Amino acid sequence: MLRFAPSPTGDMHIGNLRVAIFNYMVAKQKDVNFIIRIEDTDKERNIAGKDTEILQILEKFALPHASVSHQSENLHMHQTLAIRLLEEKKAFVCTCTPEQLEADREDAKKNRVTYRYSGRCSYVGAEELVKLKEDKIPFVIRIKTPDAPITNHDLIKGDIETAPNEVDSFVILREDGTPTYNFACACDDMISGVSLIIRGEDHLSNTPKQKHIKQLLGYDQETEYAHLPIILNAEGKKMSKRDDASSVKWLFEQGFIPDAIANYLILLGNKAPTEIFTMPEALEWFKLENISKFPVKFDIDKLRFINRKHLELMDDKRLSSLFGFADADIGKLAKIYLEEASTTNELESKIKAIFAPKNFDSEWGEQMRIMEKIIADAPMINTFDEFKSYIMKESGLKDKNFFNPLRLLLTGAEHGPELSDIYPLIKSYLLEVAS
RNA sequence: GACCCUUUCAUCUAGUGGCCAAGGAUAUUACGUUUUCAACGUAAAAACAGAGGUUCAAAUCCUUUAGGGGUCGCCA
Image 1 (cartoon, rainbow, N blue to C red):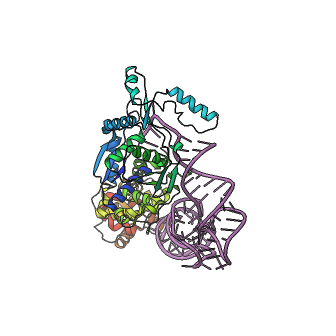
Image 2 (cartoon, rainbow, N blue to C red):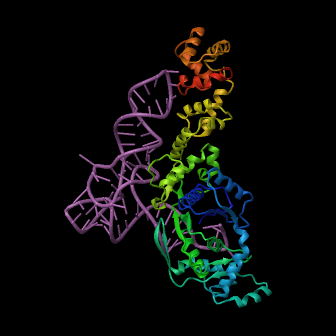
Image 3 (cartoon, rainbow, N blue to C red):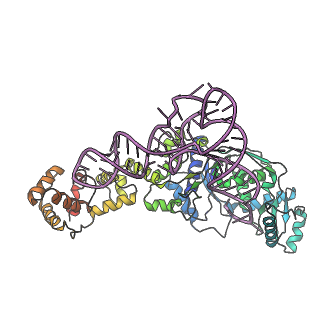
């Protein structure tokens, strides 16, 4: 069982999408279930509707899942398990105030040592619980620091050993009775029987904590981990919300298509036999072990190149539908324009210019008027050569005086692909185009 | 500051001791083709982080220095 566990606190990030794609692919390869878990334990930061937005994006990328759950549904189970740890003396009740903890942190900073929980409450057991509740004294539950190092074999990073004090006595149940991320995550993975967790490198330091939780809870199934290097922006820093390209929604708005985005994200930091491929093709050779260990920079130029290649592969009629047509010829026309466009947005503006009313105010306006009239009265002409000869003869124009205004009249642009390639595809729209 | 990860062209990578005076792709530049801009074709420029070892032989193994990144919450 594999899972993708996004939190509904912001736009889907390409790093997250990459995690989702990899989890899906590996589940598919292993022929096991792939589930979605929405991690919505932070009520403050949850954004209504983000969960369905995330699901819609997964759908666009054709990443089918066996089920969707919300972490908040499991609140009762989380509390029960936390209490169990408390009763087994594997966790303790902590009544330290935020002020006290803050002072501890300040001290640590002042003394130039790493902050760790002071251990002030570590002897407070379950028996205190009733009294604290009666006295309305706020408390949290902390798990006890492990007494041996936690070791982990990461499929990408290799063996990692974490010292007990690095794990620390961290909070598992908050003052309001809700579980913290690490606790909820570990419990849910345990209950669902998640056997392999693929996630971003920023979770690397959470792994020993989650392993520790599962160990104390008596979970004896082995969970494998694979931590993906993070994606950096052009400056070499972690891609954040401030980087437009980090948002999948933004990439869509720019005219990048899902097949190309998926292709790029799979290719990034990977050994691939080819550069251009579809997800089903990648399923044939994809291996987690091949993912590079170091962070990679996001290169939008490469994405543009890949997007263009995928647009070339798209079915003609389907491509035309992106611009409001249902005509394979328009799809073919768009593909010709792939010479100078890489996104559907760029393509759309080229196609639009062809069908938009033309501007006759330019230096070629006079010649354009002449041609417009000739075309309006002309019979249907099949080939560009015949068409060209016909207009030339009727207008008496030639060379620059002929080609420049003709191009402007037919395409609305001064430069562009060969008119002889374009003509056969737009000839049935000629009256609309040449006006 | 502590802990962890990491280091081949601008970018993504090939490379697992000899086939590497380091290959491919994107981006860049030049030329060709073209009524035009592109695309395309051809070519050019471009990297083993530094220093020490081991070895007949090192991008590849070891040591060390330097750099980059991540994480240190009652966020996920």
